[in-house]
Image (cartoon, rainbow, N blue to C red; front, side):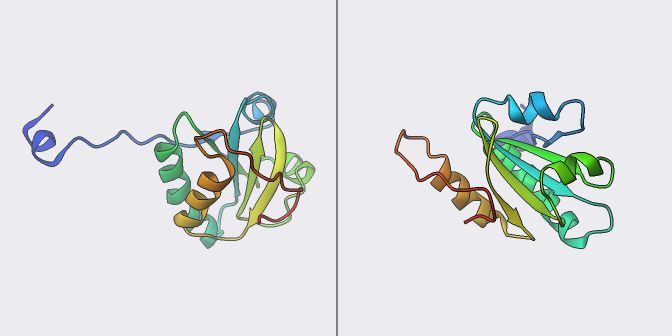
Length: 136
């Protein structure tokens, strides 16, 4: 550990979201045992670009608790269509491979943190399962 790290404290290494494609979607999302957020984005979408740092921060903060993934809508339109996504950005919320809901449009990081803390608490408290559709 260097002098500045000792002085200011070490920084946690950033964890990037998992990049999804048609070949790995089943393994990374549908077969994942636990919660998973999938950020569906597209080039040229200003709100998608604004959401990208939030997804990176969530991937880092909730590493080992919630898997955070990203899916480029322009590169995999058939997969995006099969998921029912009509616009970007859309964040799909999965648990144990089951789609619980979606968040359409830009939301701040605090929104996703509250969603995670409410829907996927560390304790074993029961939660109400939501139907497919916009969250909440």
